[in-house]
Amino acid sequence: MAEELLSEHAEDISTLTIVPSSGGRFVIMAGNTQLFNKKEVGRFPNKGEAAQALARAL
Image 1 (cartoon, rainbow, N blue to C red):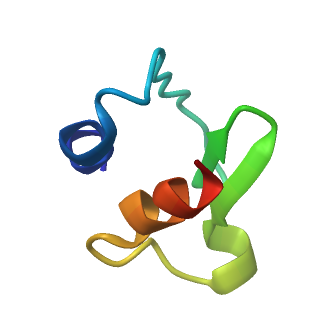
Image 2 (cartoon, rainbow, N blue to C red):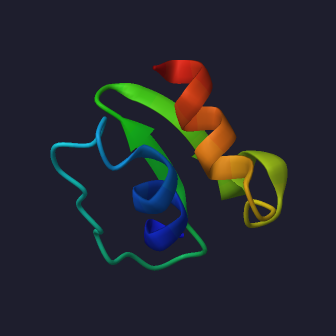
């Protein structure tokens, strides 16, 4: 996931932080904007989905 985001948006990302968690959480944030939440949609993002969400947020 991090590779996908960095390969497509390296020039737009100043910091990428991965925070380990438990309980089935997987959330992608851009600043204070939530881009993806596994618990809300019931799955991990499909290939390219996180990068597309980041592109829309930018």
